[in-house]
Image (cartoon, rainbow, N blue to C red; front, side, top):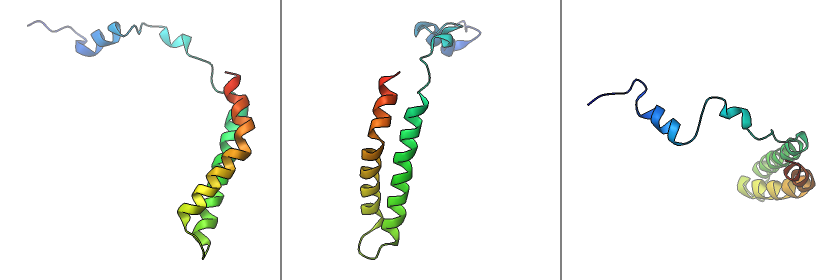
Length: 86
């Protein structure tokens, strides 16, 4: 049984259509407005988690859920604009 110098990985690489230079055709990165919206949503989620954990009447999971919900609602226009301009 003869082994090829690069083995199975190289043949899989060729079968999937990846050629040298194929990474030049990557899609453009996400716009900055998307990352701003995602940061707002994550910050709101973190604030909800901390406030829920410090509360006497509710738990951290409830605060996390409420913070995530309000964060996504607040950041939705920025997320939508960022996703639509790809």
